[in-house]
Length: 84
Image 1: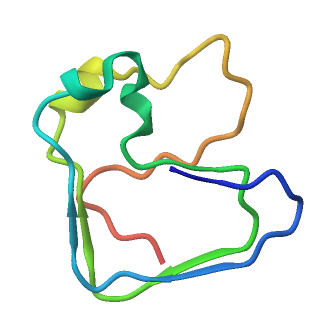
Image 2: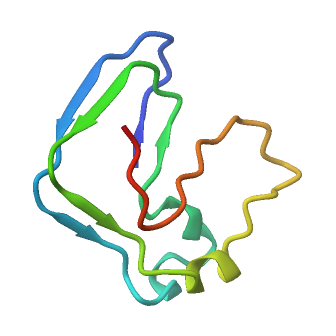
């Protein structure tokens, strides 16, 4: 997890490899939504030819994104899509 509590934070990241989600949620217990999480960041740039493989729809069944107690805005990127 990468977290910053400042209003302006410039972060540049180069991703040229592959980040692969685990196949099982047991290691995290209730922290399942924190496998790969960027919060409270403004001005983040991620570039490269890398891949983030979330390993499919099994995770969506375990981690519904409609949490009534979470009022932060989210950028939800569907798995296997490219964001530019």
